Image 1 (cartoon, rainbow, N blue to C red):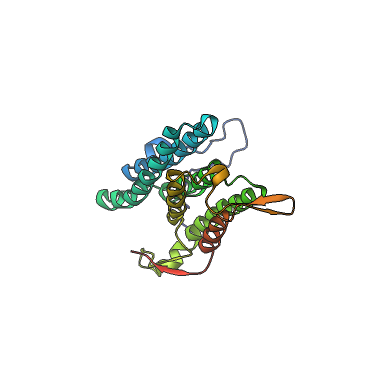
Image 2 (image 1 turned 120 degrees about the horizontal axis):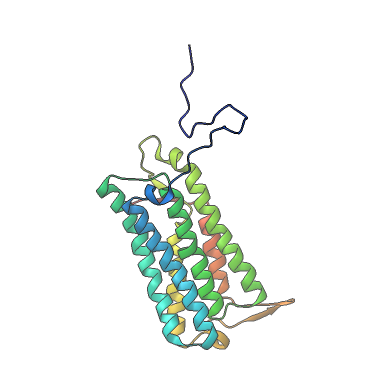
Length: 223
């Protein structure tokens, strides 16, 4: 009795010049409408990062406000991609990975860049911001590998383990308020402390707490 063939590209057993190669994966043609919405999420996150870099060059507040506006749009796109997938009943093999990678940009890297640009630029701050992004990446990776088990065979995850990464936009809201009040840079909300060889802004501890919450085992019901 022969075993069933495994799916995927077929490889020739020949070692000669005529050996067949696997068919290339057509990434663009594999995209479905939900994936395009996910890419809007990533584009908004990257746009926010570039806007903050431009703000840092000349402190033109227009670019800071542009960054602040792009991140809520990224959140809307992150919510809508699942709704679009359900409405169209179409999902791609790339969907889950695209969603996680987009979230790393918009809700991990972008908030860290916003914080650093607005004054969380001490040595301890930088270490905390790197830790924060690493926690976001780890949390998304954990979700991807445990989603099947968490769904208990229903196909729908009933709860999150650790806080979802989009909750980091709460930190951005705090920074937006501080920016609006002029409590950034040398007047950063919470002041600063000299600890050993580096400076720590106590506000950075909010990023540390957020990172710890993301990688915790706290169970949060999924809507």
